[in-house]
Image 1: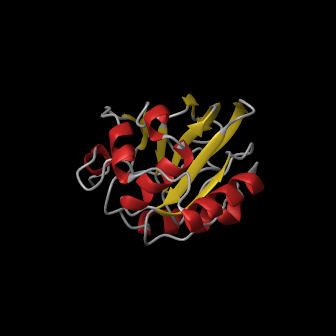
Image 2: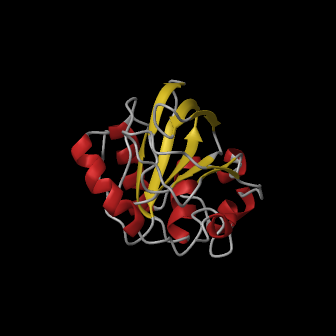
Image 3: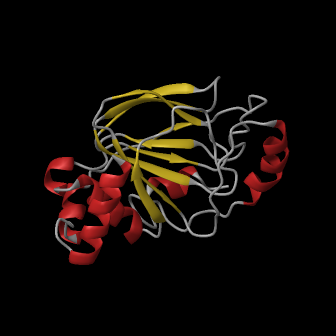
Amino acid sequence: MYIKETLKKAVENVTGIGKPSADSVQAALRACKPDKIMFQDDGAVPNNARLPFVVYRSALDPQPAGDAAAAFEQLFHSNGWGESWRNGIYSYVHYHSSTHEVLGIARGRASVRFGGNNGATFELSAGDVAILPAGTGHQRLSASKDLLVIGAYPPGGTYDECRGSPQERERALHSIPLVPMPPTDPVYGAHGPLMEAWTR
């Protein structure tokens, strides 16, 4: 799936075929109240001591959006979250210590545990968006065969993948508080709910 979707994305970017218009993406957006949860450091996955994990349920209506993957990419990019990718969610616990991350469910559904082994399990489906502050553990527990996730990152961070080793943890405890705040909400822009949820 990863290779197929990467090729599809490349074709869309070069030709414009299949890419939704900015107006159609905006029309597909739904206002929603975020679910927020703070995860505690579990000794392996540090999570984030200052910023909550945020979920928007049915933030994007996949039908009017057309190609929901391209719509999520355009939406995230227009709000300053870049380096987008198309794939799934890894089946092992991992976290990023040097960047925040947004995950948009473009197709299918998944049961994902956030916050490490002692975290909480969320059932995500097409149109949902999860926003992970740096340090948030995540792991796919199960998924439909057609699951497609769009991920992106705000400016100022650098991608890394940590799996919970003691050496990673020591570095992460120093790097997580230094990750810059994003200038915008990846879904709703400069005045989106994330900006209030992540006010320090």
